[in-house]
Length: 167
Image (cartoon, rainbow, N blue to C red; front, side, top):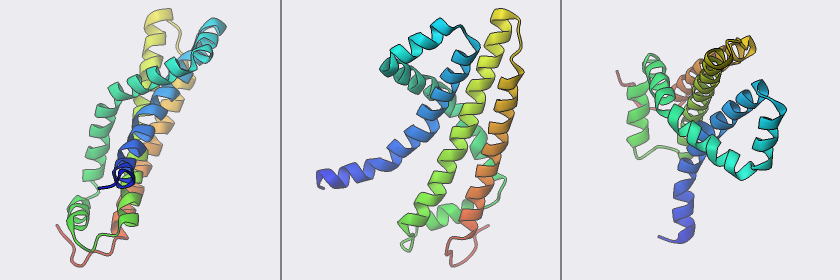
């Protein structure tokens, strides 16, 4: 297997890391920085690589819970048997597989962002006894969008060229 083939094989993993871990972690850092003093915002922007690493680490902590929530919602669609059948079949089209996987990664990303922003809200209440209700609003919107991405994934599974439906 050539180096290029190995790199192409790793792309879905990098794609998931980007969507489900780094972006939610950055959303959490931005939410935190927006509720703190100017000094905190300057420190985060001055140490950009450290901030990106911290965001990735934060995303790693939230991602398992977000994945579990996403899987519960996806199983309620009733299309998981079709997805597993198609994914393992010889006629599976890589482009269609990646579209379904991308919708899953986007749903996990939105759920992770929702969880992290909600954690920042709780931290603010415990730390300063001040409620930043905009954080709750953003968290709820991201949660709703995550549910919608789960539904979009189910629609993409419905559009797969599956020979016989599975139950």
